[in-house]
Length: 179
Image (cartoon, rainbow, N blue to C red; front, side, top):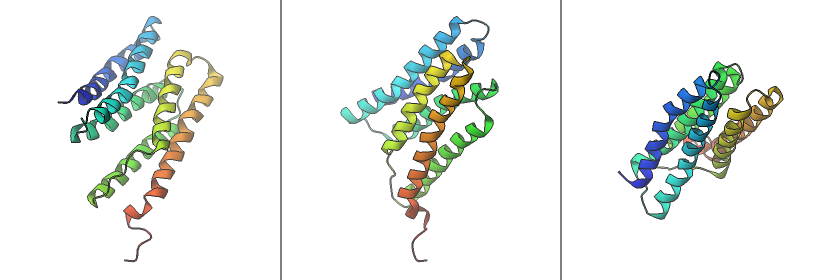
């Protein structure tokens, strides 16, 4: 297993620890800070593993599979807790999940045709803005006015990047070609 993949795997392992700390944080305030620390550390591994994989030629099929899955699991774990607490509407969570499943499906169809859809800048901006917004929200989730700002910071890049992936890769679905 490559060093890059070890960082990715560490991110996956941190998810249950983050969830446990964050779910218990209403009872013990200090756990909010522990949850934030775990979330930040896990988020940073996303950038570290990619850097290591590219710099040291450690790109692997395992890493290509696990890295985006780890990102999604980390982000969705936080969003699920906020949904459980009534702060992140279920419809907003469904938008995020729909985008993730749709883009993954598009990538699978493209791969089946021998095409690789690389992560675009809008997807990277979406991931970064979502992780930063969730970090802020972990600390300030009691600030009601901030909830809608964070929801918008999460949803706007999510929708934009999802639409962009489909516009740029529409032909992978067989549209626009003569049958």
